[in-house]
Image (tube, rainbow, N blue to C red):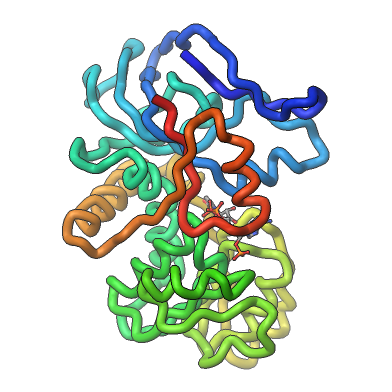
Length: 307
Ligand SMILES: NC(=O)c1ccc[n+]([C@@H]2O[C@H](COP(=O)([O-])OP(=O)(O)OC[C@H]3O[C@@H](n4cnc5c(N)ncnc54)[C@H](OP(=O)(O)O)[C@@H]3O)[C@@H](O)[C@H]2O)c1
């Protein structure tokens, strides 16, 4: 099988090599991948001061080609998707049943890949923010893999108004197609009507800007790896809340909930309520995929086809 090795020192940052299929141990499944995701998380890792992981994890969709001992509920040939902790950028990868779940056979690989993690995070962030129909929602990183689905989900779940916030106005048409009532840029002096809920997938200074933009009793869900600080005194007067969210804890403590939420995403997809957007590259074009995110030009999920 072929895999991408990530390196910094050599002239080529990404090298495609041949490697033997890994052998699944107890509780592991071997998955032949159809598509793997490329995201800002990978870009952060590649640009961090520490040397990049050679074999990073990520989101995948594929078919089970071998099972280790003690795997229950799956057979060879089943289609699965979700997250693996390492070796994602490969044609064959080891996965754990708790982190992946069944993908319906009729959903094409790119669409499935866009939903298995991005849709899960978007839906879970809405839950974390205690979203109620009739509320107004603002999504930062609105055109990202997670963000564009958060816009669609908020709309489908009965938001009164959905605003997408982005780095540049060039993403406005895409976001209106996703159902956004308004598109604002981070740099605008005002983001308009105060939202009840902000889903922040960017972090940094947008966390405090978001808190200040919230309506009374408003909540901001901080789910990015982009950091940021909150001035607690800015929460008091209008009874605002900042909620931290990461899928990791739910994955470890309640994998059934993840399966349930993905099942809801497949149902909404089949009902035409979700339109996952993606830009696909062949595996050999990993550098172009990374560049698209690094220059913040992606509309929806960026992914690689691996077969
Ligand atoms: N909490 C969790 O469990 C969890 C799980 C997965 C992902 N996440 C977070 O969700 C957010 C969205 O992830 P994603 O995979 O959907 O993103 P993505 O598809 O890779 O989208 C990248 C977009 O995000 C925006 N962005 C914000 N900060 C950036 C940066 N430092 N470098 C490049 N682009 C940046 C850019 O749009 P603009 O220029 O328009 O802002 C860019 O076009 C990320 O912050 C990620 O850390 C959280």
